Every structure is written in C-alpha cells, then in structure tokens.
Length: 64
Image (cartoon, rainbow, N blue to C red; front, side):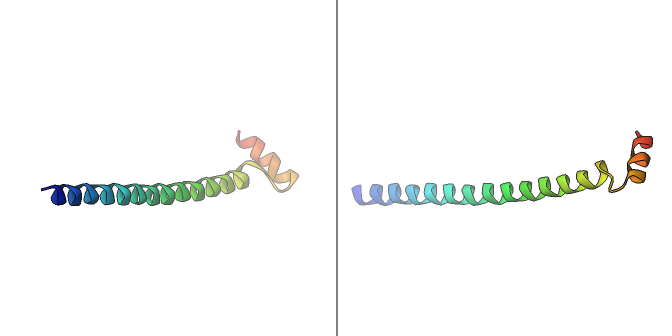
C-alpha cells in the first residue's frame, strides 16, 4: 500500500509542477501580447496626437 501512496504522491507532485510551468508559459505569452498591444497603441497615439508640420498641427488643433 505504501508503494501505491508514494506513486500517487509523486504523480500529484509532477502534475503540480507541470501546472506551474504551463501557467507560467501562458502568463508569459499573455504578457508578451500585452506588450505588443501597448507598443502598437503608443505608435498609433504618436501618429495621431502630434503633427509633423505646423500646418498639420493647426488642423489637429481645429479638430479639438
């Protein structure tokens, strides 16, 4: 009986370790996706909020 209990304990331990690794990988991927989205948002905001010339700035100011 104790051999079976040890086997079960080892299986649970392995599954928990795999779960942590899987969760870590999922969170890492999600963080990378969020970083990419933030970078894209910053780029989009830079192009829409700031004009490259005084004429464009006047047009931007009139839209406000």
